[in-house]
Image (cartoon, rainbow, N blue to C red):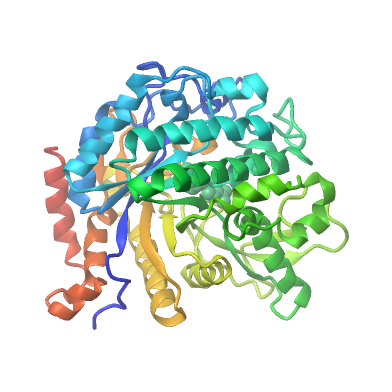
Length: 508
Ligand code: PNW
């Protein structure tokens, strides 16, 4: 039987981020970002790892685009390093033509092979100078103006060829890991013993507003000055897990789930997609620590209508209400987050990372919840996992990535079910990630790639999952399903495909 179809013209491909793959941090005039600084702190807070070389994508981008073509990707999501474009970051600072030229080459190389560029403007690598000059994301009024100028420059230079834009990647992680727990750059926190500065009770909420307004200014600028001629689409990528009650019979746990998801997603999606204040449960818990939107802020939010909801989805959890009031450093809505419910049933099977279990059933519910609330077509802008034990595997073991293949297949099936049975529109899917890369503060251990990266030789080797996605999506193409049943071959044929394509890849 043919699998459930996806919507016609379903878009799919692979995703990466600049600091995780590019390397070449001192080349062609790139300025330092907060991640360069963070990765070179002593004692290390990134397991000794840094992005100085990473996957050397800056030099090997042509070969990486060849891999995308070999995998049959329709699209590629990558991010631009702000400090390559404007090394000091600010609206009156000089523009770096050599940095602009790199992304010109990448974009042209993609288009030459028929692959659509999907460009993320910001994936966590703030120019260090903006942090030093005025506190970076802590300065709501300044940073939104600098971000708008940066965004306008990208629309001007690339908008003739780039038709899909993502303003920010996971503002939640930038705010919470960057300014509450201090696990990500710039590493500020008042709860983390490794942090020397920060205030976890206020800074995450300030930097959240700074990102919301920066997103809004970029989208408003696109809508007013670029959309009419360039006719592209723009959105944002938000993370957030789905939650079910730890005790499904306890109404307080049911409320805890909703509250947890509002703290994850509503924080950003209410202002960005509904042009409203933060969720009520956040205002109730955080009071005046949560910044207000002024009437002129709301004006900008209303001009920032975007086209799609970019969803980064990896896992789900159970939520249990906490008795008593929330602590003033709480950022989850006063709940416990658990991987098993009251009956001891696990939320999903274990991957290669402690926080990530495969929960495709809850993914389907998540899609429908988000679609019903924010009413935009959803694009999955990240989804993927490391296989159990993969961090310790050789290349030969790693390419046989059965766990990842099943994870992809199960999550794509959930998208198809949400579409066919729940009326939820998902228009695209990007697997995270094109290649193993720097997993931020976890260093080079966790491998999320569909391509194995040998960090000694920088050689890339396709894993089996990379080579099966094309067929998986072709089988779910409604037009091809009606044309013939030839597509309806047994899965498993891919083993041969894998070996054949791997030998092609070795000649790239
Ligand atoms: C995302 N969590 O980050 C990022 O967008 C990627 O750059 C990253 O490599 C990828 O997911 C895999 O981690 C996350 O702890 C980091 O729940 C951590 C979490 C979620 C997303």
